[in-house]
Length: 332
Image (cartoon, rainbow, N blue to C red; front, side, top):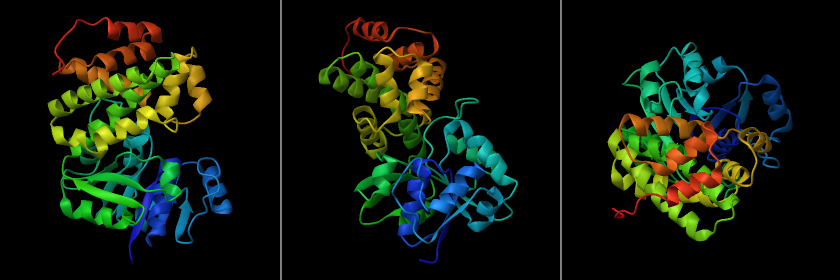
C-alpha cells in the first residue's frame, strides 16, 4: 500500500491506531505535543508509558513537530482528549496548505459550548472538508496486541469512510461504515458518563442486577439525546452505541469505570483522578451532557445524578438512592 497517515496524539489510543495502520503497510507518522515523550518513543521504538512491550513497526515514524505531521499526509487522524481537540486543529490549520482529510478517534463534546466534534472540524476548516469519526468498543491495549476488534467509521462522505476503513481494516480489526455521524458521536460521549455511574454502583458494592439496569437505562438516555440532536435510533443499537456502552461499563480497562469505582469506594474526585493518572473523558462529558439535557428538556436522570456527584458534591450513595426513589413509570 502506497498510503500515508498522520496520527495526532501519542496516548494509548493514538499509539495503538498508529501501530495498526503501520502494520497494515501504511506509512505512518505519530505526533505528540511533548518533545521529551516523543524523543523517548523514537529511542525505545515503543510507548513504554501507555503500551509497554509493543514494538513499533519500521514504517512508523515519530515527531513532536506539528508542521511535520501537516505535510506528511493529507489524511490526519486526531486522537487527543476532547478538551484539546479544538486547539489541536487550530494549530494544525496554520501548517496546512493543501487539501486535508480529518478523521478523529476522540470521544466527547467540545467543552467550550457542548457542540459535536464534526461541527468543530467544519468551523475550523470548512463544511466541505472530508470528515470521519472512528468509534466503537475498542481498548487500545487489545488493538495494539492484535486481539480481534470491530469498530465503526462514521462519515457523511462514503468514499472517505471506505478509504479510512481500507487503511485500518485487517484480519484482527474489522471496520464497519456508518453515515450517522451525529449518532456515533453522541454514543461515544455519553457512554463515558454511564461508565462512571456503573463504576460508582459497583464501588458501593451493588451487584450485577444494578449494573445491568444502569446500562439499559443509560442506553435509553443516550438514545433520547441522540435522536434530539439528529442521530438515528438504530445507530445506538450497534457498535458505537450499545457495544461501546457495554465495554466501558463492565471492564476495568475503562478509565471512566475505574474512576467511578474509586468514587463509590469513598475517594474524592481529585484522589480518584490522580490514582488513574490518565485522561477521564467522562468527567467533562457529564457536564456537557447534563447541560444539553437541560437545554433540550430531555429526561436523563443517570446523567443528572452523575453530574451532581462530580460537580455539586452529592454523595454517591445518595445519588443511587435518588435514582431508586424516582416515581414508578412505564418502561417505554
